[in-house]
Amino acid sequence: MRNAIIKTELLCKSFISDGEVNNVIKNLDLEIYEGDFTVIMGSSGSGKSTLLYTLSGMDSVTTGKVLFEGADITSLKEKEISKLRKEKLGFVFQGINLIPNLNVYENILSPTYKTRADRKKIEEKIAALLEKMELISHKKKLPNQMSGGQRQRAAICRALINNPKVLFADEPTGALNSSQGQSVLDIFTKISREGQSVVMVTHDLKAALRGNRIIYLKDGRIDGDLKLDEYNHENEKEREETVYKFLKEKGW
Image (cartoon, rainbow, N blue to C red; front, side, top):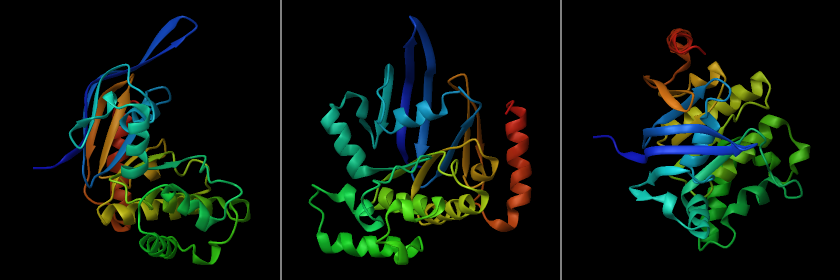
């Protein structure tokens, strides 16, 4: 039986704008399984980023529950939810968001501040991540001294430093050119194969192909759920046809 690391129960998220209530996520029941590379897609305004933020505890819910490893995180206080995000979750964003006055090594190290983690083990983990992401020669560079792809790879290192149970990514290739994006997607594929649970929001078909599950949102509800085999370059064309057909049927 597959283990659901995240589960929602009648999840709702609403915003009030100019006195009008906008129901973005509507009574959504969803299970995210451990070890999956889950992709969330949908047209603009479908609620995909809002869903990612509520699943990860970055945003509060209006009603309903989000369970992480069986525990209701919607009832946690801000200090508790902050601790959970720092210790068990990782985040990669389109904007990359590296600290500009810290070099690559310092940026990756920053989430470990004020933790009880063993310094030697952290140094070893950073060295391993830098090697995996091909950033060893860049570790003393500031973010503005690197390309967008290199910065995003550094951001992935930072997101992985505390060994997160789930890595959340919101349009991680959105600000990159095609070759940089391909490099970043290859990294996501690699860490997924190594067992890392990934939840990624994207509007890009090439990025979506990397997932083994695609959830399609429409007006705040799940309108489709496509299961796929593990990605490899050899079956990419056939996979693209399958995913495109699924998305087209959903009105993408």
